[in-house]
Amino acid sequence: MGNTSCTQLDTKEDTSQLLAGRFKVSDKVIGKGSFATVKLGFDVKTKKKVAIRFMPTQNLCPVSLEHLKREAEIHPTLNHEGIVKCLHCKQDEEGITMVQEYVTDGSLLDYYAKKRVLSEFEVKSIFSQLISAVSYMHAKGVVHRDIKADNILIYANTQTIRLADLGFADRFSKETVFRNFPGTLAYSPPEVLQGKPHRPEPRDIWSCGVLLYILLTGRYPFGSAATSKTKARIINDEPDMSFEASKPAKDLVTRLLCKDPERRVTMAEVQAHPWLASHSTAIARNPLVRRASSIAADLMPGEKRKMHLPRDSGEQAQPPGAPLAEPKQLAVEAAA
Image 1: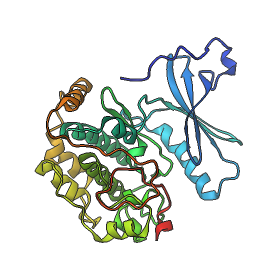
Image 2 (image 1 turned 90 degrees about the vertical axis):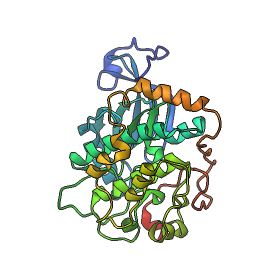
Image 3 (image 1 turned 135 degrees about the vertical axis):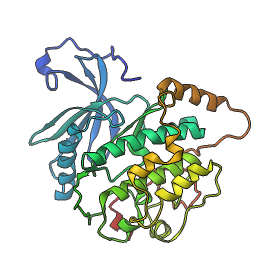
Image 4 (image 1 turned 30 degrees about the vertical axis):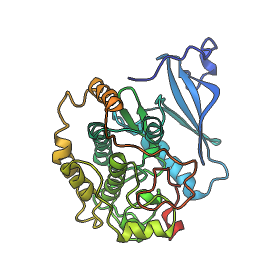
């Protein structure tokens, strides 16, 4: 597991030309978003690839600028095996540059498109890693607020994940109540969509529930389109629970997707749930065991849990049960 050596990048130049005297930037763009361009880089100290994010802050609206600065402040303080590592962060008048761990196989959404089959053991392995990372963040007083398949990176060979993209992350205390609505509609809980003041932890827990439903079924529980119909389904409808899975798995999904945030399962209860507790042995957490399970699932005869290939665009309305496709990210009030 881990980053692979990068011999194709020239590392002989003076270290004064390197970022932080350590990181060489290549011309290869490996990602591009609304606020950042990501280039492949090389750590001359460890001889490993890195991902270097360039986030210009000029001409940004105050809200977007606040999000970027908050990410630059929060991410370097987090140190957990389930969160993508921030190796260096620099802020100046031009913008923010962040050097991160390079996760070789892209997002969990990309992984679906290639693999198309997940056993329940694999789902449990991936989800338990996510819960460990989110639990760590909450214990540190940090809420993610945009947990989704596209914001989780993966090393495919060992099914080891990294939670990424802390652009909407924020700090909180026991007294904190949020009233703003950044995030992705398909993963947002009813209380957020209804504009109610809300506690931060139940929001992340709901998003984890949406992701678990997707991992088990390959479909969104309420639809993925950024429309008023999807919003209404999240607020009013119950998810279709007729899919194939064990009773403990379905029970956890139901508890995660409880519409009342006061009755929604807590993080401690998630970790103690029988479905996840049965996975907490050292052997089940072993990357080699996860790899063997992945290979076995690929070769499994008969019925398989098929993960539907993502569409080219998330623009089309997708009702509950529609094939998996990445929903558009937006401020939730835009779909009101």
